[in-house]
Each structure stands twice: as structure tokens, then as C-alpha cells.
Length: 311
Image 1: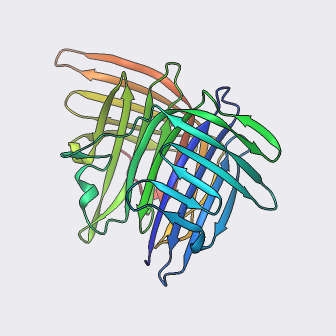
Image 2: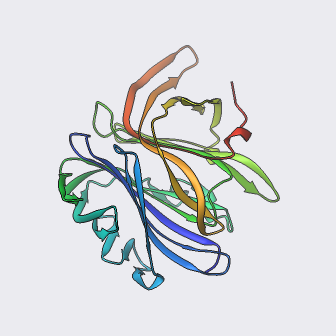
């Protein structure tokens, strides 16, 4: 393997919403084939991050299902188990997941990326493994026991060569009403010697997934960003989804460039996202849902100054 990375993103929030973490296990291969397994541990409340590096021999995986071991740490769709320490951080414990809600994978709708999932040699591929699920279990973090039982979680996956040269990403599953979740991704996509701005938005509400994406024929009707917020509106023939993300304090997370974890992205997991879903009729517009998502993940990466605003 050369110039390749594969990583998973677990966000966990306890019932009180006082403890918010993102755990990112993965493996990377640079241009020369040098290999590094890693775990990133992001504390959202303290706005701190620890990067733990492991040898290639410490990375084990299943070819048939999501089943990954890195050292004494284990990751799957059913649970995560952590047992690591460095000079700043010691974490140990196990959290189980239930009532997983993945982005549906069907013959003519194969996951979040749609048919782009099958296009070879794309820069980055993306999958939503669970929009929302229940947590059960505890972690001991630097001697303090944190109970995540009845908390909420989110899982996604990225793999490929590099993160896009510019992109926006947001996610939240903490609304006043349970069972609601949002994921939005916008990025520069290299394509046949040129590029285009592609996007994927999934909004889970009342057990229905509203999909807005480049491959579904949806369009961006508004896009603006500044130092404090990101606004993006997407629409198709039946609905419009209005999203306003308010930035929060974040950290610089390592990200892949040609497989090597030498890039940096700014991420927060305590942002706020206002969401409004509108049904479009010939005569009027009907608001189906309006609410504010808390504990939101928000990434703004790369040369965002190149993003063209849409009014």
C-alpha cells in the first residue's frame, strides 16, 4: 500500500452532555509505503487532542466486516474498547452501541456517496455507518470515571488518498427531540482533469432520511461562510433544507495528504447547527421541522478562500 489512508470517526456524548469526545482510529501509508497506525483522542469540552502512534504490526483487521484492533484497543459497529496511555493521557474502558442507524445501502443507492462510491481513484470516499445510536458503558480518563450510558453516538468512515483541497463538514444528533440527525459535507472533487463542487447532505427525521446530494440532482441555493458561521441551503424538487452552523473553539487535527498524516484541519465538536426542513409546494412552503442541533461536529478544511459563495 502507498499513498492511502483509512480511518473511522466515533463521536460519543454522555447523557448530561458534559462529556463530548471524538475517537479517530486509522492507518496511513505514505508515498514510500511507510506505515503508521494511530488513534486520535479529541476532548471537545477541554478543546484538546492527543495523537497516539502505533506500529503497523499492532494494526489488525477483518476483511469481511468492520473489526479493527490497534494495540489493546478495539473498534467495531457494536462497541469500542480503549486501553492506552501517553505522557498526558490515560484512557481505559468499553462502550457498547445499540439501535444503530446507518445510511441505507441499496442496489441503486449504495450509501452516502451514491454511485460515486464505485468511481475508481477518487481522492476521498466517505460513509455514514451510524447517524445515531445509544451508548452503554464507561471510560476512565486520567483517573476519572465517565459513564456514557444513555448517551448518544455517531460513526462514519473515510478512506482514499487525501482529504479534499477544501471542504466543509458538519454533524449533529442532539436536538430537543430524539432520533433526529444531520450530516452535511461539501468539497472540491477532482474529476477527469478538472474539478467540481460536490455535496452530500442527509437529514434523518421521523425515521425518514431526506437525501440531498450532487448525484440526486439536488442543488445548492445558498452558501456563505465567515469567521463565525457557515450557511448552506440545499434543495430538490420537493424540499429545501436550510443549515446554519455556528463555529465553536476547535483543535487542529492531523489529516491525510497522499496517505501521510501531515495535513491539518480545524475541527470543533461543540458547535451549534440551526436546521429548517421545508416542503415545497406550487402554492406555498410548509415548514416540516425547525430546530437547533447541539454538540455539533464542524470541520472547515483546506483553501476555503477558494469556495465560491452562492446567494
